[in-house]
Image (cartoon, rainbow, N blue to C red; front, side):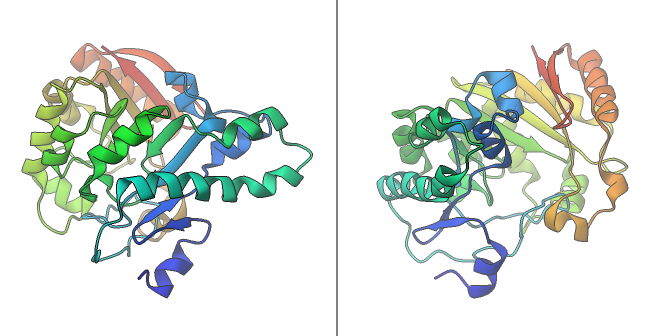
Length: 292
């Protein structure tokens, strides 16, 4: 079902069923060798080596200029796999992708053994997860095994309303309809949907995060994002630098990647405008955490 070109672009990903994928992240591999952990461990206490990173939807409704992933994903899905199938097969795929680490003498064996049974599920790998119609059921299955972080672009407010993960992100690069069209390059204008999702975020029972990806020279205007923060009232704000990686290098110059000092300055302005306080930061990942 998945075209050969897409399979080539998804080298390193384990395909699960007809429309899902798994890929161990950079920081999981670093943690297995005791060489560091991701900022989510530093900020929220998850364990990098026990995190499974996946997507239930190799499809997306935007073609963001800053996205480092391949943008030519599936156009149609002929029948959705069940959440039970995706959950079980994602674990199998994750274990298979980690199998090569058993032969690496530099790996922490205790961590590798623990990694076989993930207790953190990052539903954020590629594509837009809220396009999978059984996402609430998949989240509930994963929650039986641990914490679940879902990252969304906010274009599907009906699904944002339905899901209750451990932590729900809405990721922003735009501040109005015009910048949404320019930076997110959606298949149609979803700006009103995004505003609806931000309003829903304010009333969610789960922990909520507004992630602002800063692209230097393109959207580094904190005063334009402050009203969106006030609308969403998230528990946390992550101000994160666009990283000059992967396919994004075909669309943006290296100069569009902010230094950590730029991210810190942006976060400080957001703090002044919204009352959120800077609580933590990761220089290597160029991200600053704010909390209300």
